[in-house]
Amino acid sequence: MTSPFDETALPELAQIRRLIEPANPHLQARVLCEITTGGQRLPVHAIALGNPDPALPAIGFFGGVHGLERIGTQVLIAYLQSLCARLPWDRLLHQQLDQLRMVFVPLINPGGFLRRTRANPAGVDLMRNAPIDADESPPFLLGGQRLSRNLPWYRGPDSAPMQAESAALCALVEAELLPRQFSLAIDCHSGFGLADRVWFPYAHTRRPMRHLPEVLALSEILDNAHVHHRYVVEPQSRQYLTHGDIWDHLHVHAPHVFIPLTLEMGSWLWVKKNPSQLFSRQGMFNPMVEHRQQRVLRRHAAWLDFMARAAASHALWQPHGDARDVAEQRALARWYSPPERR
Ligand SMILES: [Zn+2]
Image (cartoon, rainbow, N blue to C red; front, side, top):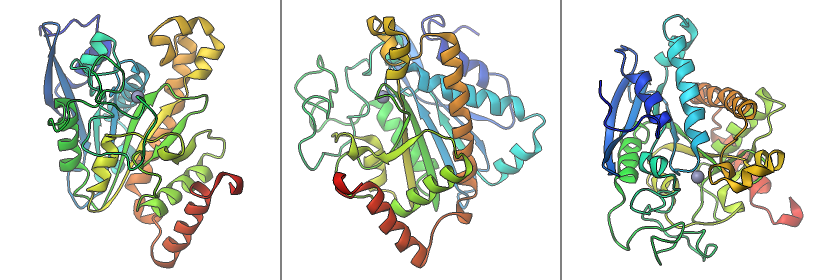
């Protein structure tokens, strides 16, 4: 099959195609939208597996929102490859899939990947593009700006519709995740800090989100099941506020329990261990040494699998009634008390 895009310039998109092109009765793949840039037509692929029954929980895995952060897409492709390789023989995986819907959009911004830019080909930062404003002034530029598409963190023109990639992502989440009583979303990024962080909403306000007890319960089952994990779980607002966060936008309108998490893989450690990466645009956001890249792919696979199991079994750990009130108080003390009392 001839490819409409240059596979050497976009190896991750080629990998996704190789996963979905062989007929596989367990996978449903479709193209959410197509982005045209540099004379190439680039598809945004969605891949679903598991039970579509809307009465069941779902988990969505998302990556490649930012074109420089390739490692997030690579982590998701590695996880998806592992699932596909296990489908022919893994009975326990099929039991999980009987009780869970899994959806993947591993490469949301193929134009940014091709052009090696954080933004999409229109210069818009897809993580600043949703119609939601911060309720206090976020950091200058970083928090999202409408001054110019030539500056980073551009939100897009005022009152314009969302970019095609953002709109397609919202439509998928609204169709596959939000109608369910319980859903999780994992959006994989890199580039912030030394530690691997797991951010939950909100980014537009310092106010607590309404599913705080569920987030606390989820982080506690992670702490108990993976005692040596190093993820720092916190609301994004503890680091910085932004305009236009797509997960805030989706969460605000979610009718049921919806927990969108952003995995921010700490890339500064990769740079610290290999300072020459500082001089490479890709190097700030991706491990450049092969053994380090492999370690990153391995480490997060366990966490992604844990999250899928947690979604499938949410009824067994989700707090209710008085326990939910207690969890809320503990979550407020853990994440929202003033710094001196932390
Ligand atoms: Zn990012």
